Length: 93
Image (cartoon, rainbow, N blue to C red; front, side, top):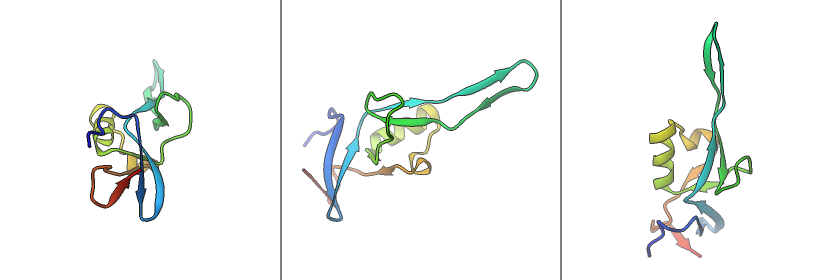
């Protein structure tokens, strides 16, 4: 089953229903001044196109890799699980 084009995949893992997102919005704020340089703050990650909306409970490995490669964001440190919907450990609903 090709799941790479879907924004959200609902799976069952360990008897629990989980929405796994393959699409997210990210915002990262910076404070810049001419004396002290700049400071970068923790990014916020939101489900799909939600901007400042709630963060996803889980994302696909592909999205987690993109977030790290492009923004150096480790989703696990944000409290977001990485679930592979094509894994034998989950059932796609």
